Length: 184
Image 1 (cartoon, rainbow, N blue to C red):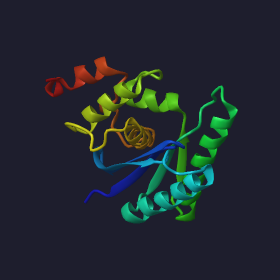
Image 2: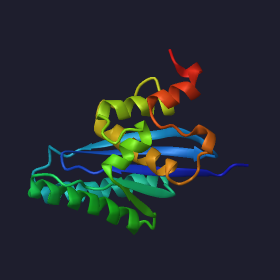
Image 3: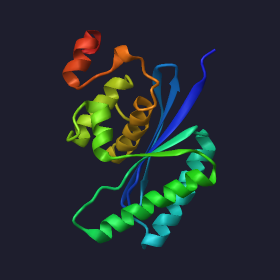
């Protein structure tokens, strides 16, 4: 009997925060769930952080992930925005650690590279490749922040050494060559 591993991926944000969960059995990945937190409606940063903590805990308590992967904040021009983003990430990390779930961080470029083979891929390209990798007709949410959270989980799986070497892709061309039956 193959063991199952649940990975929670988190794309931290202070306006919208994305979560994606995958189940991994052997080399097979399946979408478990995707969520996003719409944080724009909260009156201040402290309230947003409290909600991020509570919602992250509730997702962990509901799905019992074995591992959590987070997108690391990237350097931007606006220092205040970066500080707020770092706090959001820190709160999600604290919730994971509070439940004794191990965490790993990945840079945005590493996530995009793992999913598409291109570290400069657009959010739409990442979402398109995720739909293909997970055999989804469409996502259960309209926000690309949720698919970004899912991308973090898939990136973590790819970087955990769980995939056989015969199914590694360097980009769309490589994927299509190895999966001609998936082209429609």
